[in-house]
Image (cartoon, rainbow, N blue to C red; front, side, top):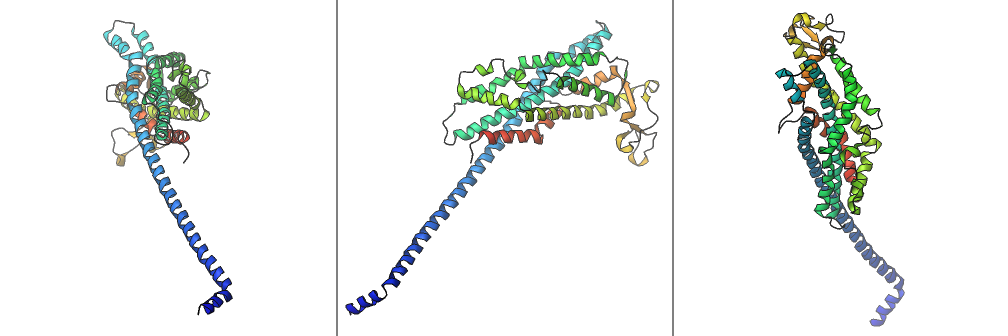
Length: 376
């Protein structure tokens, strides 16, 4: 019996060998395949967890950016209001203890300086906060990974460097902007009749005067935001953060972004001014109004109704904003009123929300966060 079995095995030995190899190979292949599938599933799960964690941290970082910007914007407005102190000039005019013409000329320069200063300062503030908070957020992501723990004191010291901007930096920026605004506005008489397009032209001239200068704040943001010897920091980690931040501020992309935000800020001022402009025009006596003959060819879409319903509008009822003008002396309170309405502990001007909600600002934050985060 055993000999017959041995003979059977001997005769079919090649089949048994190939069958054994096939079964063993299939077992090994199945084991290897299952291991690869498990590794792939674990890698996918890990990648998903990492992406979710990174997304959650980035969203928290963006909320922190917005909250920090709004908080600092209030402090910034208070500093600007105290620095320019237009209220003191207004009170002196009301009290009649000064040369009113001279006081009005001074107020004219201060008011337009204040508008430009707030727009420029808050754009610069929004950008540097977006950069710094995202750098810290990315470093926090690294800390919770494999990198060494970075002390909270180091992050706080890094963030505190930009507080210079709320003190000496804003004073420096105010002096520079005022030096550009004053020559432009000194040429405008208090009696000169202004159209809205003229007001827009003056804002454009101010922006052009600043952007064409080598000391343009948008090209030298770090000089206004950080102390002069900020890079003398002995800690190499903090020094690298600060150097990276300054390099980002000096980049062409950030300068282009800041210029775009500045233009948008002046547009918001013009939109707000147009409504008040019309109200002030209606308050003027009929014999002092200057209005072109009827609305312009732009049609009713560009004109506001003067007490008439939209169904019964006629050319006599329609006032086109581009066709009316009021004296510069009446424009000054309009521009100053835009800022006075925003003063107070819980009031912000309308364009700060436009700035922080800008898609370009948010994209800047996302790029910085991803750039400083370790690769997945």
